[in-house]
Length: 190
Image 1 (spheres, one colour):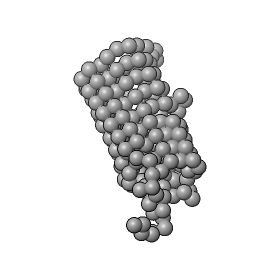
Image 2: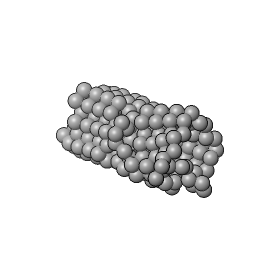
Image 3: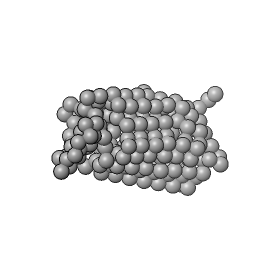
Image 4: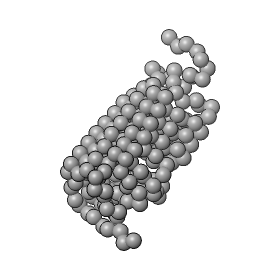
């Protein structure tokens, strides 16, 4: 199958659930208010692309490449990022809802999560070294055998991270968030 190359295009209000996005490589493209919910974007490469106010909930990401790709104001519920092509995987999220998504065993080093809803997200065995969690809600997010060294959680809320089962060296936390590191001990902090 020959893959298409699409560069420097703007897609505005496209419904890719009705008419699927062509398999290929998209470079420097912008997707504005597009509908991808439950869409199959398998084997598609997004390089230096931007998604603004799109709905990607439950999209199929089998071997999807995300390199230098930014998401802003997007609804991204239930995505399986672990199915993405891991080579060169680099993304950023701003004002997105990623609840119920899975980052199982992925490498998301130095990823920027700003004002992101990360409720019930699975970060099991994920490498989040140097990542920023600015004003993120991590209610019931799972951190198990995760690498969060040098990650910044100072303005994140509602996290529960066990320092004994995660690598947290040089990670940054606020004083008000310390309770999230002691949850396993079932103690009260006042």
